[in-house]
Length: 251
Image (cartoon, rainbow, N blue to C red; front, side, top):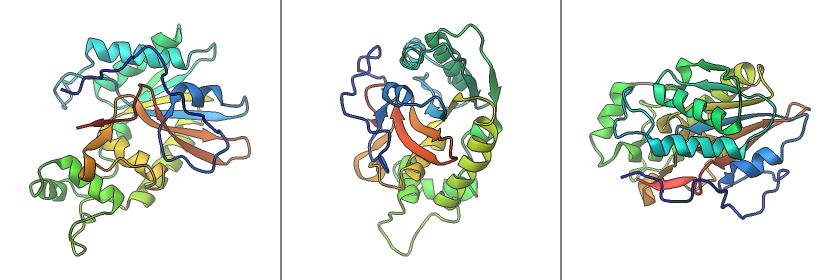
């Protein structure tokens, strides 16, 4: 039923984290990434919202478990420095931000809604995507095959429905994350939705992270996503992060 069954109060990721690695092909606990930040770094944590009710529409809100999950993530990145929050126009993302801020112990909550976080960033033609969805058992398979550029028939692709993953992902990072979000705060938290963040994680890891729904039904977990680390020299590093015990779930 989608509920997270792990321990939501501890960071159980015991794997080593090398902040200087050239690339990352697996999710890293958000606590490790936050602790490795240098004072001259800027960081934007782009996360999926916490556990929600069954509705995927605008009326889908956080469950009690979702609030606990988000509060626990806030505790993992607690500190005295205020964080600015960005979220979609759908309530559960703002609720997630509020709970993370509560977990961090923040007394103020600076936040802003962005339409670009609502989930359609990578969609070129929604009607065409609905046509693709009608031919498969799960719409997740459509997104997965497009993002990894893997199709059972080499003469078929989903390019009419979606933008180019690499071009559109670069545009989002440059125009939204670096130019808008990172420009306003040293540490930022951005909360969006799985249909937005699943392809973004694949983009940021250059398709090297294994999360192929069309093969093994793996999908992006709640409170997982990407950390965008901007160093003082302007270089940018992407690290796939998880706020819970796992970065993926079986959907």
